[in-house]
Amino acid sequence: MKIYPVILSGGSGTRLWPLSRAVLPKQLLPLVSDRTMLQETALRLHGRPQLMQPLVVCGNEHRFLVAEQLREIGVAPLGILLEPVGRNTAPAVAAAANYLQAIDPEAVMLVLPADHVITNVDAFYAAIQRASALVGEGALATFGIVPTGPETGYGYIQSGKPVAEQCYAVDRFVEKPDRATAQGFVEAGNYSWNSGMFLFRAASYLKELQQHAPAIAAASAEAVAKDYRDLDFCRLDEAAFTACPSDSIDYAVMERTRHAVVVPADIGWSDVGSWSALWDVQPHDAHGNATRGDVYLDDVSGSLVRAEGRIVAMVGVKDLVVVETADAVLVAHKDQVQRVKQIVDHLKQQGRTEHLHHTKVYRPWGCYEGIDIGERFQVKRITVNPGGKLSLQMHHHRAEHWIVVSGTARVTCGDKVTLLTENESTYIPIGMNHRLENPGKLPLHLIEVQSGSYLGEDDIVRFEDVYQRS
Image (cartoon, rainbow, N blue to C red; front, side, top):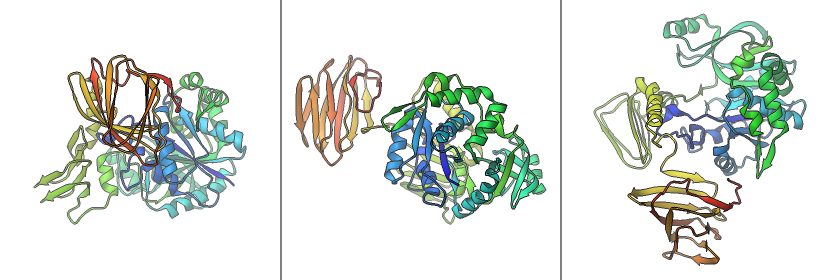
């Protein structure tokens, strides 16, 4: 039996603001280790018997970061499917199922969100092995997490009669309960947390989807039938996928099918759905603090402190979450971190950008970071990877002055092509076609000074782009 991991890397992770942003969500961040959560997910079962290369489903805006992060860890994905819009998990998994069926009609899918923590991988693999026998008979298996307490932030699964060793029929799915109800579930002993991880044959899932959510089945099949290659990516048909109803696997299939089974698993699992959840899964010092970065603590206990750039000093406090980034700082009590989403909603309503991106913005050729901005000027630090090439472009409203800090720059300005090295500079007038490239083997670092009446990122007219952006 060949098992194909399907990694779902959508979602925005708003509850982990200000670290998680729309263009850099939590699955693409190194939250628990030095690797990102996507990388940890891809490596978790890499090389295990029966496990094939992963298929990743992600949004268009994250495609280059996803590809680069997989390349960094030496994982060559079976494919990267690009969703033109988010439509929840049922359509995303349906698209993956249709894609896999074209490769292997007997394909078994292991559906894994990209942003989960699993500390006992051997126990997880054993749970997969237990489920696989039932999946071969047409079952749709979900992995229930053995609860460690009356958690109100998770849905629950009630186990029914046993159908195999440590595998049970699903009696019902339960929405997130209040604390008293959750306590009753834990005491009953036949309830587990709903992990959102699944194992089933692609054909079995599509059959159940056709029966219980035919509109999703039809739209996702059409989106794959009309997909097309874009560099190393597979773009789902935009019209078909956009027309697809939005629903989760649980609502669309698992709560309706007669073939659902649950495999309880004690695997050290967390969905890291809040800052307090991240505190739970990180190492603590003698006073119960979890820290990262340049942090000074004096008489501090039970706190999570994360410094991304500057020193964070705390004195005489307890049970706080403090997260520092270049453009925002969060201070919250650990018991109130669920309200972080309200901050993101406020930023959206105010038309601000701190929920969208950091001051450092990643591009397929490298990244840029805002250093200073004022009336009619902006200063950026730009890094171009070896071999990286910006689009041939023009700006209607701004001029640019580039100063090379280190590396070698090949600059096209109109009909002129120039090589610049350390401490050399050039000027790009308003309305001039231009391009920046790094022909060297080391990263190119330069400072860009923009000046003009409008400095927005949308003032770009692209004439030619190796990354095929519009």
